[in-house]
Image (cartoon, rainbow, N blue to C red; front, side):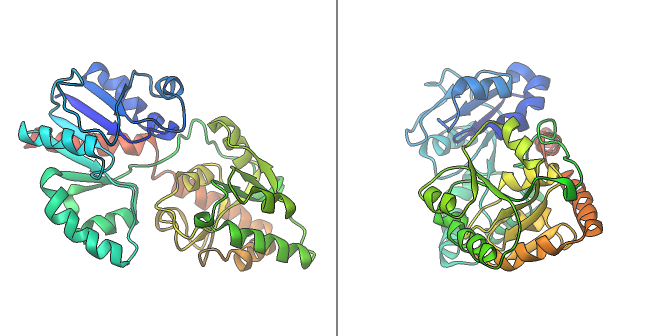
Length: 341
């Protein structure tokens, strides 16, 4: 069976997720991607295979790509013209199309309208979907996909890179933020929380990995800033932090959350973070209102060593549900289903 996978802006973690399948199936799998934040060379090294680069907004076909029309086609996003055109061609040739969807259920007007658009425009060209976790599954069921055609495990970090750190009570940083320094990530609320807690003479250390327009404000609040770095460097910082704090206004899933639990960190996530349904329980962290993490950060500082030990163990337990192994399991289930039909 000929398989092709098209990933918009293929990131490092996506390459690591697919690598075991690429190693196993070799040339029977073609990888297509649009330009992402990392170089093609770095992604190909992480993937262990060459990539065919295409434009997301330009319609194309399999003949132009000098590829055989695959029997099974995975792609990330029905709204990209190039992916949509390739998917329609696969369907016209009697093949199977799986759409990888990272959006989460939000109960807003946009998704009410999106349900109808999906049903009439995109659903005829999609046989099954792969989602990151519970919130994505809920959205796809709302859009009308049968539960048996929804597979979880789309996202996850690599446990070979993000390894468990030491007990939380001995870690250097109390809090770590990883991401863009923008409004959508709840940065304004994080800055406010840090300033208020320092005014109350709370003693803690907080670091942030990333960049963005709020950088100057973060630095003036005595938040230790580290630039975006490779996965190994981020993993080292994770193992030095007690809690990942992510007070996002909206975050579809957040691979960084899985990176944190693989490292044994506790979590402070807003209700706008989709992965909270999969990776956060009362035993390994706290849920805050979007952009308002201060109360939960204070509770985290007050946690005793016994609770912190249980927190670390719970995070490591929940981390086992996602990653390359789980992505490959979902891939194989889909392949088996196609063979069965």
